[in-house]
Image 1 (cartoon, rainbow, N blue to C red):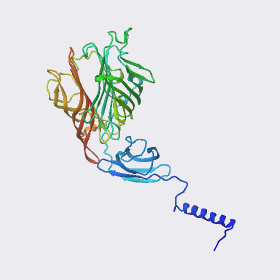
Image 2 (image 1 turned 120 degrees about the horizontal axis):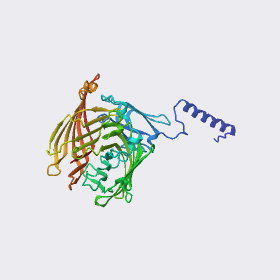
Image 3 (image 1 turned 135 degrees about the vertical axis):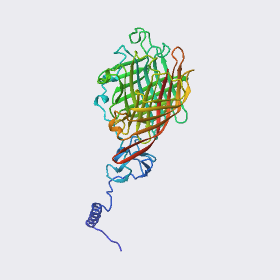
Image 4 (image 1 turned 120 degrees about the vertical axis):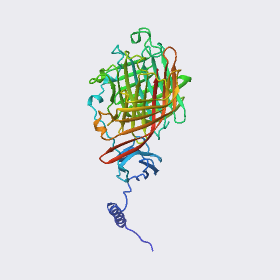
Amino acid sequence: MNIKLKKVDVIIIVALIIISILVLYKAKIIDDPRKEAVPEIDFLKDDENNKLIVTYVSTEVRWDEIDISGICDTSNLGTQVIEGDFITDCFGTISVKHKETSTDYGSWTFSEEEILPISIIAPNLRDVSPNDQGSHYNRDILISREWWYYTAIFSENSALSGWTLSVSFNHMARNDLTYKKPDLLIVTLHSPDGEEHGGIIERERPLLGDYAFLKEPSLQVSSSDTNVIISFEDSYVQGLSPNWFLHIEGAFPNNENIKIDLSIKANSAPYWSYSNRPIDKSKGDVASYVFLGCNVEGTINLNGMDFEVKGIGHHEHTWLSGLLSTTLVRGWDWCHMTLENGWNIYYSNYYFTSQFKSSKKYKINPFSNIIITSDKGKTLTILEDIEIDITDSDKLFLLLNIPNKMTVTANPSLSQIVLKDTNINLNLNLNIDNSLSKEWKRLSYVGMKIGRTNIDGSISWTDKSGDHNIDLLGIGSIWHMRH
């Protein structure tokens, strides 16, 4: 039987279909057919490491299309969502949604974040002006040594994962290194498996230094209220806190070509770790400030191969009076550490006696610093009672040794009343596993060790919520000097 539909019947049927679809859509029984499909993303909760790990992605989607709420660290994430991506340092409840459609991918509850006791810090200890970030040796004839340090430890989902980078632009005193080559550019890259790149470039500074007319020093500094540029031949760093751009270019020892372009962003104000001026720190003849927990991102080219990197670093700026001769300062150590729980620790110490013994213990050194931050420098825990135990060393010269392994123990001093009540105690083991050693034997007898160290230890304290004891694991960028 043939059924002939009139035009009006077709119109009525189509209208009924449309109305039915609209009713079903309004009732949320079916989705809007005009809307793009929402990407499916599955996550795995890793309680032990406080991570959310992406285990499945149905189609291309960017992380900027995803809303992540709660206390967590997303700095490891790239542009596209891919399997294996992870969100770290998750505490409390973490919720993930698709921004455009509000599709809920889920919520996961982790243990609450451990809140470190923090130090009460005077405002002037965290105040650094543009003028402080430029050179001091150009403005004060008494300042003969000045260094700008930059480090990075590259993250797990980055190329060169677990590698450390140390960069330093050094204006040395004329009597520091054989009286002839006091301008240095130091660039070292160290991998977890022993690979090493870079080295130290030395350049002789003209006898009259910055006042020479025929030849300029290799290290140049220019500064204003809006920008500071420190350059060494074709390499430079420029910017003002909280942003810098680092460019390294040149042929290093063994004819190795290295090119580095990194953006460095501080997440917080710095801290004056030293100054002989109690109030106006920037006018000190001996002074140093440090930025902790900086985000570092960019490209490293090693002998023609590009590596996209990201990680966490630090920036330190130090200057010393020429009145502090090398016969007074006989060595120093510092280490910037990035821990698996997202914390950063900065350790430094000056020595005023020659390091003859291969192992030695130092108690309550007033020129030591331990600074801990759990939030990339926004809050700081500073411990002043520090004990250093050097347990293993390499012989540097006939009578000098430089550390391979050391243990650092730190507690509050008697004057740190608030922290003292928490019974906070830090124990760290530093085990250097890959480093560059450099010696200057003629006249000066100076040695340096710069590289990568493995960190383990623990920290404990007591507060209103009870006793806390946290195991610490991480990687450090270290620097030792002995004279």
